[in-house]
Picture 1 (tube, rainbow, N blue to C red):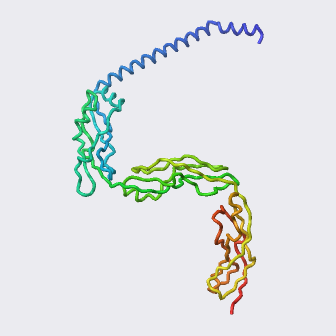
Picture 2 (picture 1 turned 45 degrees about the vertical axis):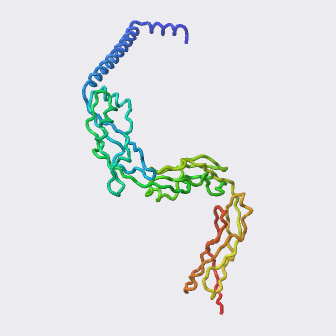
Length: 339
């Protein structure tokens, strides 16, 4: 841009019309700022005036049981806490809500009256009114406490040792497999709680997780999924996920005949099945041909049936084999009678 163009632009900026517009914009912004300030001040005065009035509010008071017998636990109470309705000035209610200073109402279990042999007891919250009133700010008055009767169910407690079980999913990467079961240390935990609950628990699952694309053994801490009302000897365990590369190979296995009678002699074509299996490298040398067993099911022949082909099944594979496939699934056959 030449100096003449710059000069013309500078002159346009200094024109009276543009200067007037800028002054108006500044004045408009100042008016808006003054408006916002007065709006905030008026809102504050309105709020302060509203808080001078009397209102009702409801608070929740926690309940804590003390002197509980060692072999019992309070469960299924009719309420998780007490609902306290108070009345007083807005300032006092606001302070009470912001302070959160309510302490739990202590219930001495040893002094409760039991209802027969059902393990039930009840508490009249009105007996705690004086204690509750002392926790209220000046200017607040307790109007009511709900429920008017707090029913408490006591249950016998016990202990039980259960195994830790896998609750997640470990996914190896391509060309890798889980070389064994997922291990936990410790492999069991001690549960303590109501007998009617722990009697239904056979194992404690880990929290749900997903670990994918694993190419090596992984060890990490993991939390347990603990049911409500149950305490556990520990909340987490050490988990080990064994992972290794796998190898794929094949073996030919003779096809046996599954026939409960020796009155027939069966020959199959072919006489062998080819099994292709995958196994971890560390266990590859342990696999033997004799560890596999294949049979053709010929039992239907005793009933006079003559199927075109017999179905081949794999009856036995080594425990270290991760997965396998085989061929053929069906074979032709020839029947020879014995005399």
